[in-house]
Image 1 (tube, helix red, strand yellow):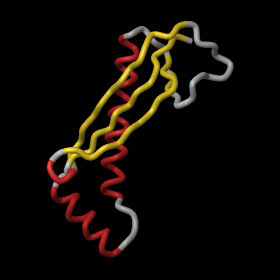
Image 2 (cartoon, one colour):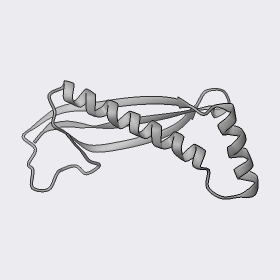
Image 3 (spheres, one colour):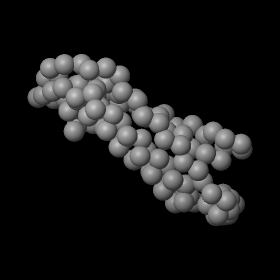
Image 4 (cartoon, one colour):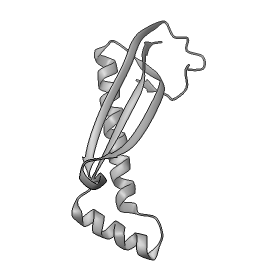
Length: 105
């Protein structure tokens, strides 16, 4: 399955638009990750811990998006948009929403 943020796929005309497809994932950053990220905030530099959490959430959302598109009979998703938001008390959870258009190419 092809997944792209563009509205078309060069050299592969869209034969059929199947509809909007969305997927959401919510992942928590546990207290140990928060402690180490807090230390990183004080001393500076990148937070590999939070980067891994974001990567995991993004990967899960895209995997779910692909699965839902396949269930619709699609072999590609175009125009993918990823939105990131913190939720929960004190922003302790990260939500990633992936949206796109399921198509047949």
